[in-house]
Structures are given as C-alpha cells and as structure tokens.
Image (cartoon, rainbow, N blue to C red; front, side, top):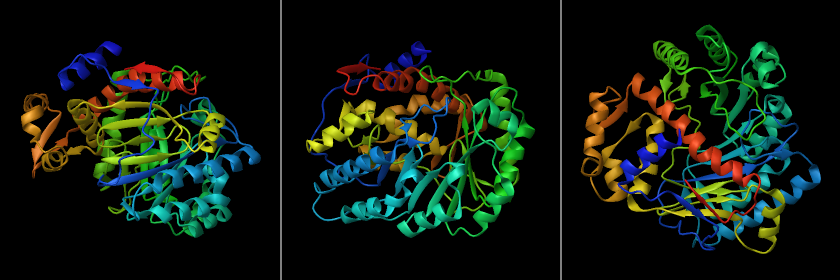
Length: 417
C-alpha cells in the first residue's frame, strides 16, 4: 500500500523527497494574495463517539465547548487581523464532530469571521440527524447558515446497526425539511459496507431526494487503523460495480455530478469544503492550504486552548511544498470535481499543464481514465473508480498515519509521508 503511494509520489514530483511535516509554523500567514480562498471551522464535540469516524472529536461538555469557542474566536481574530481590510473568500463550512452542539454560538462565530472576511458563496454546516429539528435549524438560519449537510450514513436498520447509529424518523425529517429554507440540503451516505447492494444504496438516495434533499454525497467506507470499527471493507471488484451502477443510475435520473461522490437534483445545489485552491482552517485539527505550505492544527482541545491563550497559532505540523509537490496536491484535489481545466492550472502556476504532465495525461487517456472535451479533462467512470481506489491507498498511507500520530501527540516533532 505505502509502496504504491510512494512510487506515485516520486514519479509525479520527479523527486525521492517525501512530504516532510515539521513542528514549526509561521505566526503570520501569507493569505492576503490567495485567490479563491475558502474558510473552515472545526467543532470537535459529539454526544457519543461513532466507532467508524476518523475525525477529531471529543465527548461534549458545555463548559469545555464554551471555553473552546472562546479560543476559536481568538484564533479567528489572530489570523483575520493579519490582512488589511476584509478579505474576499468563497465559502465557510462548519464541520466536526457535531457542530450543532454549539449552535447557540454560531452567530457569534459567523459575525466574528465577517469582521475580517467577505463570504461570497454561502455558509454550510454539517448536522447529525438528531439535530435536524426545527429549533436548531432556525437558530442556524438566523445565524447566516445557507447550506446544511445531514450525516444520515444509511436509512436502513441493518446498516445503522453496523455503524452504531440510531434509526431516523423519515416522515418527521421530511416534514421538518419541507419548512426549511436552505439553498442546499445535502445528505451523506456511506457506501461499500458489508453486503451492501445497488438496491440498498439506490433506496437511500431515492429516499433522500423524496424527503427534501437536493444534494447527496456517497462516501466510501475506509477502514482507518486507529478507529475501533470492526466493519470489513468491501472487495475491490464489488466496490467498483457498486460505484459504477449508482453513478449510472444518478446520471440517468438527470442528477448533476459535481464531484466523485456527489450528485444534485438542482444544478445550483452544491456542498463541498474540499475543492479550493486555498483555504484557512480554524479550530483543532483544522488544516490550512496556502500557495507554498500546508499546516494542520493540533488535535488536542486542551493544547489548542493553551496555545491560543498564549496568543500563538495552534499549528502542530507544517509542510513546505516544492513546486512539483504543490502541483500534485493541486491536481489531486481538483480532480475530485471530476474535471481538470488546463487554463486554471496555468493561471495558478504560470506554466502549461501539458509541459509538466503531458505524458501522464496521454497515458490516462489511453487507459480510458479521462477524456478531452471542451477544453477540459473529464474523468470517465473507469477513471472515477480508480481515483477512488488510489484515494483509498493515499488515505491509509498518508492521512491514517498522520492522524494516528496526532491523536496521541499534540505536537509531534516530525512526520515523513
């Protein structure tokens, strides 16, 4: 697994040098000249801990949550004040954890962000199904949230049992969403669960659109080594057949595919915090991507608060990109949208895409992974699956290793990937 990702990295970066993350950071972040900048806020609190979830989270305590939000507001001010005036950004997303546990402080967070940033494409928030109730949705709407994503995972009891989730009252949720006034209502589902069939996944997607969603995301189950999940991963052949079948079904239904895993019934309905040229992350475990660096905040809530109290950024690790490394990172996450625009690449890096990766693009075309249409490279069904397949290797070889270490050490000295 690590051999595949290592060889791919070496080939695409034209170097044997790994991605090196060091326990260092810039107190002043050079984001003023970054275009298409996104914002992300991490709220790590949960009522209970799902054994399959790899993200940074901690059991909810009102006292600790309020202390954390106070520190979060100070981090936003610490970073935001580094720019003269209000910086134009694309979007703001709240993830977790269960962000709605801090719903009563969303307006305070959003108002603070808007002191320093202008948000042009809306504000999104992830929700646990238990929080998709009128009172919480109204609080979020009043705070300025325009998009929500509900982590359903599955409507079916057999998979809810596997994932340790409670059942969802579909009729109540439908009634609640019929009165909600969000521009995007997304629902997340996990695919490639044990014995999951096309009919199982189709039923979940059909139900989602029938009860009020205009956007769905179907994320593959990934068996992270540091979680306590006992769920077995689906074999490659079955996973490919399932992904191909559900993609064709959604396409035939006329849904718009906006990324590898997402489909919408309305073209303007979008929900993704991933495909940004640059982004700033606030909160523990949040990441920041700038022109020549990538940094990740500490996973420790306690150490995060201590750093902020010292008026220091809570950065745990930073990597400084070589030009080729930055290109690989750009292409990997841009491809998540299923398309790569050579003009955008050249505008970003100042060199033509073909001059850097012409041979790789030609090989991808010959293998049937991509096609060239209307001035952009677009993934085929085959290409989308192998993107997913490689992402699975990447996740386990890179993210699994890094997060596994950072969950144990607030500030590790060095990690090589």
